[in-house]
Image 1: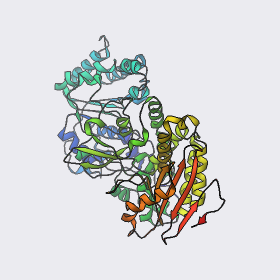
Image 2: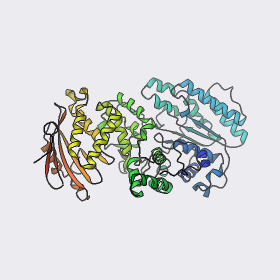
Image 3: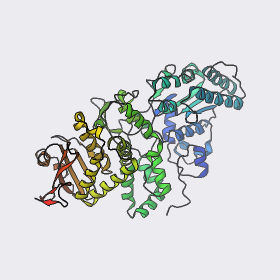
Image 4: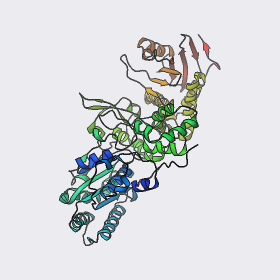
Amino acid sequence: MVKEDVLYPVGWQSFEMIRNAGAVYVDKTGLIAHLVRKSRFVFLSRPRRFGKSLLLSTIEAYFQGKKELFDGLEISQSEEKWEIYPVFHFDLSKSEASDPDKLEGYLWNQIHEYENQYGVYVSDCKSVGEAFGWLISRVSRATGKYCVILVDEYDKGIQETINDKPALEKNQEPLRPFFSQLKAQDKFIKFAMVTGVARFRHYTLFSGANNLEDISFMKPYSAICGITVDELRNNFSEGLASLAEEYEESQEDMVNRLLQKYDGYRFSRAEVHVCNPFSILRAFSTNFLGKYWLTSGTSKVFIDFLKQANYDITQIHGIWATEERLSSLYDDNDPVPLLYQTGYLTIEKYNRDLGTYLLKIPNGEVRGALFEDLSPMYLGIASNAAAEKARELRQCLVKCDLERFVRILDSLIAKVPYPIFDKDSKESAYHLIVYCLCLAVGVDNRCEEPMADGRPDLVAFTDKYIYVIEFKLDESAESALKQIEDNGYARPYLADGRAVYRIGASFSSEKRNIKRWLIETPDGETIEITPTANPLPTKL
């Protein structure tokens, strides 16, 4: 049972509300103290629902001198002055940012509120940028204090119009003169921070605010948003105990399960991994390991963009990318920046010599979301049906029911739309099917994992079994199995302790089905499965 005295602030964005309510709060104030003392003009990019709004709310409370809210937190051990500064906080997620007139109206309304709060008036200004500049300078002079500027979700309008270039350009018009004041009023500003999903450096709306320091890849702030494994253990002992009881396993096993499902995000050269905080809090508040990432709204932006892009989505595994590429504007021919910035991909490794990052899908929750997103386009089945098929495939592997696994997969292939299988795209259709299978078959799976002698198409892992699978299009299952043996694809897993199965599979592009599977068991026995020909597996 979930303990009623533990309050998990799912979706809460107010630091003050969380602290006053006694809700669980993961202490990031030590990093905040470092940030506000080392930097003045800052930009941070993180995926949606990753705690950016709460971060800005905490910074706001700090600069408002609300010392009592920080009692017992790390920053209280080093802060002595607790000075009060005028803070201007603009949350563009609350505006209709895709409509430039309504966005400008929102900015004016916020400025008028601060006029009334501080008793200074700038209503005679002709533009929102001019008014904002006057507001900063006049409030600073009136209070004798530098001002603090916080802008959250600056790119809401960009996200909503990413597929409409004229609208995208028009939506930036109200923001250019607004952001230019960050530089124009430099002498009146103590600290300024802008957050969003899209990296800012290539957008012309920031051309007048070139003093922003992008901390998105900086090692000291790797965990400024998100929950590390240590924070998970230290802050959620009650929730871990409750979930462990619900799933009838140890707390350490539950930690590992949570990490497999919600962890894996990495945002810098430092080997610091964090969990998606929204999903973690939802899991503890509901006492259930559900699918929460899809509810963030990210998938619609991704799918709408992908439909217009000329890109082979199967190529996102094993991508090496520079920081410059990951910081780029979204491009029809290269959705990798979009995949990274929205959280579908994250950093796995960093090559110091080349200055490049190896990317991966972060965790099981995102893999499942990606499978459900892509299935309607590539497999011709609805997302809810895709989720059920994925569950069935995983259960087959957990139980080592390979006959049923093959039959479910065969039924999926039969439903693939004919355009995917047109004459010129048989090979790409085959790769799409294999790719979707990689996404579907488990929390811990690796599609085309690099090895010294090549790449197996799929290595799937369960608690008891490891499956090394090679697929062939219009070739024999024997050749697939032989490739596994010749290249030693199974060799790295033989000392693992789990039973290793080697599987060679043959697809038919003409009949759009699985012709034959050959399975070599851990005992060296070979089993044949031909789903459309014989009802039961045959031992060879």
